[in-house]
Amino acid sequence: MDVGIFGAGHFGLSLAGLFDRAGHTVHIASRHLDGLSATISERGLRHTYIGDVDLVAGSSTILIGAVQWLDLETLAKELPDLEGKIWIDPANPYVREADGTVTQLTTDGRPTSAIVADLVPKAQLVKAFNAFTTPMYRSGPLTSLGRIVAPIAGDHPAALCRVAELIKTTGFVPIIIGNIGDSVVMEPQGALRRLSIPLIAP
Image (cartoon, rainbow, N blue to C red):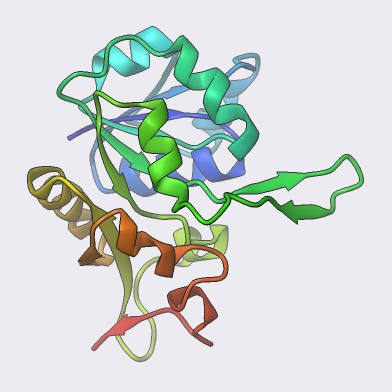
């Protein structure tokens, strides 16, 4: 599969590594391209390529918005037509202050993915990967109890199946938990995020 990632911070690069190791072609866009090629080479990512927003959007059928919550609206304004594309939304409504503190913003009761879906209305949105941490990407899906489950949610059955197929190739176990309205259980204060350990498939 061709996967396009917008954002080359710790999260975006971790996602790139996950898909690259699974053999997928990854295109990644960043506002800071200087040194990114060297970083990709240092991480041993052999199937990952850098480019601008238009190149990444045009080269990939599955797109991921791996930018900060407050940067999503700006990114959406730069995107070309996304008709027929799948948009994976891993966003959480956090803002990181200059001193390193993290604040959770209110969404006035709306699911975060409903807000993101409004920003990319022509794409088929799937909520996924918002509960993963960088160590989980690096350590992989296997635990002593079984494989880590990756919950996903969305309103488009075909897109859900496609994202589930992508997740399977990485070794994690996809599970569809419902539609965008149901995705609130994946959010920072949701039921799945309050579990003491990630969901495990034996």
